[in-house]
Length: 195
Image (cartoon, rainbow, N blue to C red):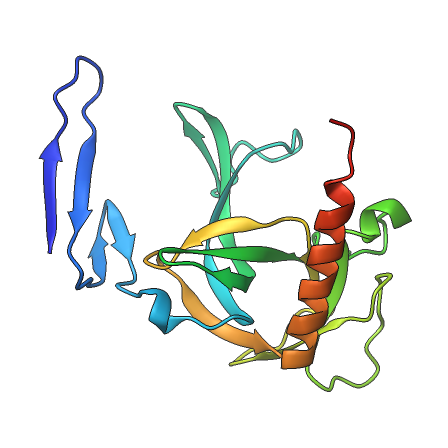
């Protein structure tokens, strides 16, 4: 059950929602939720979800349907796959997958490559690793990964368990463990930066 009331402010109105313990999916023109909770997810799962980021590409076409102007500035939106690293009570920490417009890591300098790891389809023969680490193996549910797929190890983002997501695959257990080791190592190195 959802209850909504309008905040009493002098500025724009803000809706305040309270969810009961039993969630249900919502699909309206203004709101999309999955109705899922923590118990519906497992670490290592690959999700596909709406991904929104401030547009930092000066070359994007003004007619690109993924580019939207908001009151806070231009935002680029698209569906993106992410890997669930950690699951908390209401949110998950995930890392995103990219293909970099089908160029993978080929054009990235080595110091940047250290923060990415290539991803491959489970047991794929003839895979060409573009990264500096052994690739992460993923078993997709329906469609294979693009050969230039890479995981942004340090690109962690919060995903709410109730967000409108689709479960599309899963890492192998060994690959998840290696990804977590890379993530921890890079976090330890980042903590040594100057105060």
